Length: 323
Image (cartoon, rainbow, N blue to C red; front, side, top):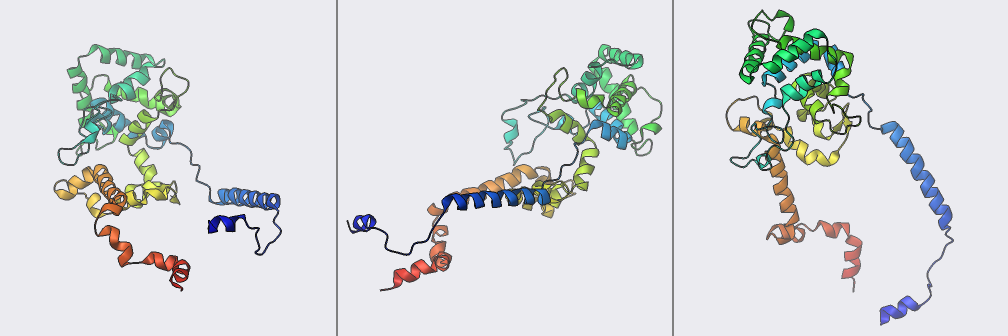
């Protein structure tokens, strides 16, 4: 009752003139100026998109080697695992969440990255003949041709990654198909075909990213723009600009040597190969601890043992202890 009586009484304390329209206008103008000014000074970098034309022009040998790997099924995309194909996925022991939904967005590198793009446009007669020869061959014959070329082009005692030094061999139409895709890339045609053949609009860049990721072009760009995992790249904008700071708890773990090991066997190798799921699990455990702090004996008593809140709200507690 006493509180209600106090609320009904007119204000007897100090008063001052207040123009809410003026204050609101000033606030909006100041915030707008600060927003525009800071956005102009500290705006996110606007780097041009990576293209297949840029890749084939700046690193032609790598583009050709990667195309051969797509045809031979030895690229990273070919064995990526769910949701794109039946390869292995990251796991913690026997637990592999990516395997649960299975293959939901199937990607067949040789067809999606090479054969279908070549068939989507009018090609020179040599490429058309190579496509017909490829389609007429059995899967085993196709694999033999592609494997022969992939082995020859990556032979450290032979071509060693240089397409110009590949010796003659039984490669079937694979060399012509590779050359045809290379010419499509250098002309810019592949950039318009690979995303969505036969469609005008496209918002799914999965195939471009998968193909680019199989070569060194995308990885080199990531290094140049400070976006690699061991450079806190997960939380950076291009060019080492501050980006998604909320990802710092995740990015921190990628900086640890045990998640960046060059070992091929052992515990560190396992953590490196399955780093994403291990780190996500670690963060998940920490989040659960944070959520259940009020229910965990010991943790919930920390404020009583270390009363920092009393320091922050010292004025309140000072008044409260006064007689």
